[in-house]
Image (cartoon, rainbow, N blue to C red; front, top):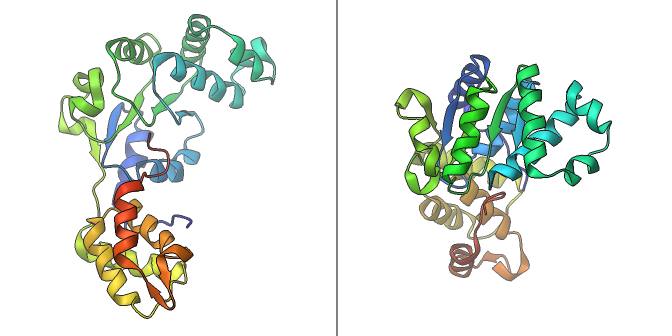
Length: 247
């Protein structure tokens, strides 16, 4: 089911202001809340932003940034690799780091590191180099501002002003979101109302969980005649749900 924008105008405005001010900051919120979705809505407005969709390690980040710089026709990357990303993939991590750092110093970029995986001290040191020697603002995206998610990057964002939290919907907004999502999905069933009430209860207002359960309700294994098999669907959801892009 395609995602759609609902009730996030304030958060989008905050993202635009922070990116426009070239601030380093932390964007955090639970899995499925829509962090990546909102970033993808806003980032096209900031063409100098380099986006690393997966950020498991420093070498992976520098490789992703090199590919992003080449896609943006950064002069240093074009001189070295032309238009062929295969040359980047063949370079060592150390060589790529030097190339990327030089390119960052030559341009006016912002870096977004999505889907962090408990960053190590080495990862944090690389980010510090980008922010300091590279003079580049860095936006990091994590499930929380706690050590278990932000790792050694936690000291980079000590103040609340350095953080932007994205929260699950409150019950009234979640109810409206569920109704709109069900309408867009053309969901029909004799127990549709009961199912949507249970989705509201089960999801805790998490938009990713809501969309996942509505998508499941379209599958034959969760239908019996004109009814949705609510209990079976929920049990399978609890066992298997993983928001898109979450590892």
